[in-house]
Length: 200
Ligand SMILES: Nc1nc2c(ncn2[C@@H]2O[C@H](COP(=O)(O)OP(=O)(O)OP(=O)(O)O)[C@@H](O)[C@H]2O)c(=O)[nH]1
Ligand SMILES: [Mg+2]
Image (cartoon, rainbow, N blue to C red; front, side, top):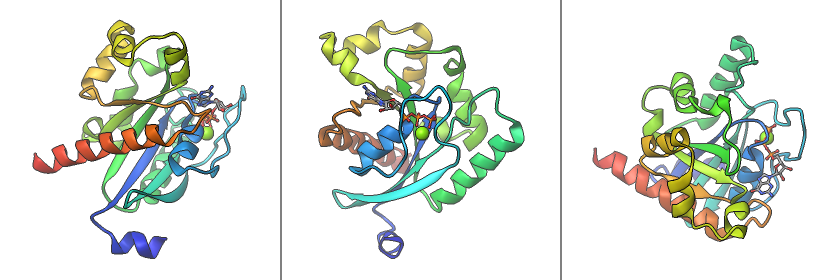
C-alpha cells in the first residue's frame, strides 16, 4: 500500500481525526475505512492512547486515516500533547492533510468552545482552512426529523461560529450503520476544500 501511495502522489490524502474522547473519532475512522481497524468502545476512560494510521482506497484516492487520542484535553501534560502532535505529523508523512474535527451532535462542551484555536496551536495557523467538522450521532438529528440545515441554524452560537469559521464545511456520520454514502459525502467535501485551496 505504501508503494502504491507513493506512486499516486496526486491522488492521496491524510485525514486526521481530532476531538474529545468519546466523540467517535475511532468509530468514524472505521466508517471511513469500511472495516474495524481502530478500537472503538463506550468508556468513561480514554480508549485511544496513541496516534495510529490505517489506509484505504476510496474511488481512486489513497486515504490515510490517522486516529488520535484526545490531544486537546486540558488535563493532558504538555509534553504528552507535544509527543502526540509530533507522532501524528510523522504519520501524515506528506501533504495534503485534512483535519476532521469530530463532535457529537447532541453535545457541545466547554472544552470544545475554543477547539479551533487548539487545532491551530497544535497544527499551525493554516489548519483552520484545512478543517472539516465531522458530526457523529447524526441519527439523533434524523430520528428527530430535523434537517441538517435546521440543526446548523439552531445550534449554539459558539458552535455556529466554529462551523462558519470552517466555511460551513461539515458532514454528518451515523457510525452505527457505517453507510458508504456518508463517506462519499466526506470525500466530496475533502476534494472541494483541496481544490479551492489549490486555486488560492
Ligand atoms: N450511536 C452512535 N454511537 C457512536 C457513533 N459514533 C461513535 N459511537 C460510539 O461512541 C463510543 C465511543 O466512540 P469512540 O470511537 O471510541 O470514541 P473516540 O473519540 O475514539 O474516543 P477516545 O479513543 O477515548 O478518544 C463507542 O461506543 C462508539 O460505538 C455514532 O455516530 N452513533
Ligand atoms: Mg478512539
